Amino acid sequence: MRTVLVTGGAGFIGSHFVEQLLRAGDIGAVTVLDALTYAGDTNNLAGVRHDARFTFVEGNILDAPLVDSLVAGHDEVVHFAAESHVDRSFSQVAEFLSTNVAGTNTLLDAAQRHGVSKFVHVSTDEVYGPIRTGVATEKWPLRPTVPYAASKAASDLIALSYYQTFGLPVCVTRSSNNYGPRQFPEKLIPAFVTKLLQGELVPLHGDGGHVRNWLHVEDNCAGVDLVLRQGVPGEIYNIGGGTDLSTRELTGLLLEALGAGWESVRNVPDRRSNDIRYAIDWTKMADELGYQPRRQLADGLSETVAWYTDHWVGGSRQRQSASPSGAR
Figure 1 (cartoon, rainbow, N blue to C red):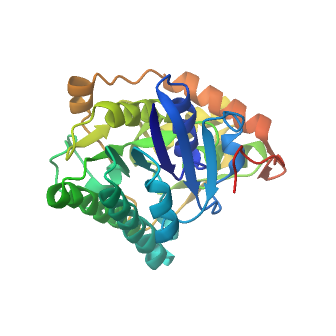
Figure 2 (tube, rainbow, N blue to C red; figure 1 turned 60 degrees about the vertical axis):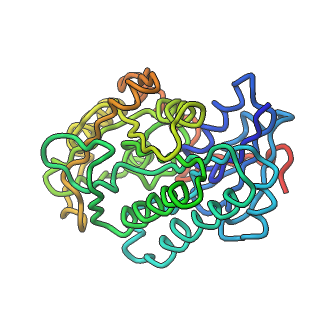
């Protein structure tokens, strides 16, 4: 039976991945390591807290002795933990570099010494930078434009270097914009939904023409699991296949879902270094690993809006007092 260490598993994507992982019949144990910063929440793991195979450990990936002790007891590592908000990266560059680059290296060093059978490093399409036309394949040059994306690009390269130098079986995934229940409301969809639920105005940056591909979190997690199981060491895999929308188009869908009109939107100056378009080619995932996204945008947005309607009260998430099984 496989044993898997998941970093950042109390976060949005990580918690969905842990749920998906524990539904598999060949998993003997899953340990989540999470620092529980503002975007991490043990309530995200409520669905697995009573699973005897699940353990939660609060800690930082920069804590080398802790990381070493955890990696030593697991066959595989899936690394989600990261500082991930673009705007915050403008004022906290050192923190992003520390967590995303040095933290990743701490994990890789332990994985190399203990001989893990697979290390999946989870990254983002933002490392490719803005793409006005066409789509980025895995061989596209890295041209990040903001500190967050630059820190992820650096961590990607460090991860891949451990394969080249030490033979560590590393794979890198790069996904498009994820959405779904439990996402912290600094990202566009949960930010807009929670503001509209509270009767607040939502900001539309610039002309709203920035294009992103919106991928349901469960589809991304399914892709990461395929890479964990079948990915070729040393390879990069783009995980896409969602729906391309401009910010204005997405805003219109969210307004409709919440019964609001355009009077609930305020136009604001564009964000600094707001890349006009991201676009990735996920043919490799489809052809080599059989990946196919399954969640339709309309259903996914409806589900997401319903979750925030049920769980977001008075400007904050409803809290539960219970901690996950095995928490320490």
